[in-house]
Each structure stands twice: as C-alpha cells, then as structure tokens.
Length: 180
Image: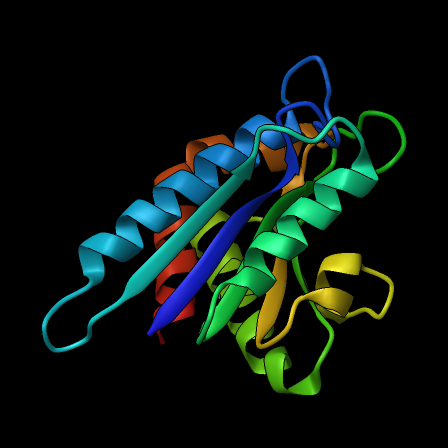
C-alpha cells in the first residue's frame, strides 16, 4: 500500500489561525505523526510506503495549492492521497463544531466516513460526517483516491480542547482508518 499525506496550506500561507492555534502548525504536526505511525505499522506482511509533504516555499494560496497538487500528482501508484486541515467559522466559538472529511468521488465516501467516525469516536469531537464537494481544488485536481481531513474547528474552544486532550488517539484513529 502507498499513502501520500500532506499538510494543508504552507509555511508562508498559514490558513486559519487564532491567538491559540495556527492551522498550518497543527496540520503539520498531525501529518508528521500520522506518517510516522504509518511507517511503524509497515511490516513484511503488509508493506507500506508513506510519502509526506509540507510546503515551505509558496507565498500565496494559488502557488500553495499548485505545489501541493503537483507533489501529489507527481507520485505514482498511490492508493490514497490525504490532505490534513483544520476548519474555521467566523469568530470564536465556545461550543463544539466537530470533525469532517471531504471527498469528491463516491468511491472515496466509505473511507471518508470511516476515518471521520474513528476520529469522532476517539476524541469526542462531534461527527459532522463525510461530505461531498466539487469546490475544493485538492479534491478536483489530485488524481486517484483522495480525501481532505478537517480535524477540528480551530476557532472552537471545545474542539481544540478535545483535539489537544485526545491528540494521540486522533492520530491513531487516522492511521487505523487509512489502513482498514
């Protein structure tokens, strides 16, 4: 099995942020830990190749998306492409909003739903489910099986508390979801 995982946004294109959290830093942390755990799970019985990407060069959103998509499409024979993000709504929220996973092709819906279910179950985050989109450039342009994770809402105090308190379990849930 071959998995390509990238953190959403880039070092100079940080995405959503609050005074408490920065999307690109949290997405990089999750991406690195999930990639490491996937590599550990690789065995002779189930060989696994994991490819990991973080954009350190782009200075604007268009270049950032082109770099991420170009990296994913430049890889061959990938079984699943994953982009890691945190979502946001306007203003700070005290209440929990939850975890969701986006997909484009119906063939990716079961994986998106499964990963979301596992993250919600492991963390207590509200399960917003698998969501179909034809509006997300990553999903529109990356070739092959692909999902876009929205781990939690970065401007929800409840979501970020659950994320931080259950970080290890969330990483394990993502790994389990991708491998099952």
